Image (cartoon, rainbow, N blue to C red; front, top):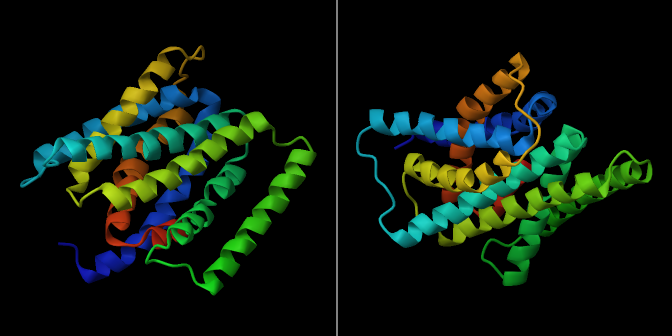
Length: 250
């Protein structure tokens, strides 16, 4: 079991890791089509986690077929849908910073959903005020850039799809997934995401250009973002309320 100090450090480490994903996307996109890059990322991440599983002891796989299906659905949303939307938007010319701002609206959607459902984890007036300020700031930035032609609907729609994917995925995982080993859970999720991304990658006309920036981005994505960031996100969702986890992305 993780120590108390490690548990307290998890949110901080997660924020530091997760934020680098948007920079990595901008670094890699001049040299790779989005779904081809993600297909490589998912495949290599599965190999890395597979080696982790083989070297570990007492690794438990999901006990039922239903849990396998739940994990696969979450993987499609939080790996395939979220990452696919962000990377397509950045590839089409959206800045990494703006893509990050858009998907960080997740706490607003999460709060609205939980309030509508009357969930136990209610949002306080102070939290609503903070969410409203963040939303207002994004609207101002986005409106100005769309009016100036810096952002188009072709860039905005994939980013909004990414926002919906990670919001639904987070809520679904918290509601339907029973706690299980993060290594085996990640393996199932990545396998499902790979099954979705591979067909799209096969039909992308652009080829991968193995530039040092691309190789570095791929290694960082596998070793730090997937093994570190995605694993931490899974653990944080299992341990905390959906609103608390979503606030970390803010």
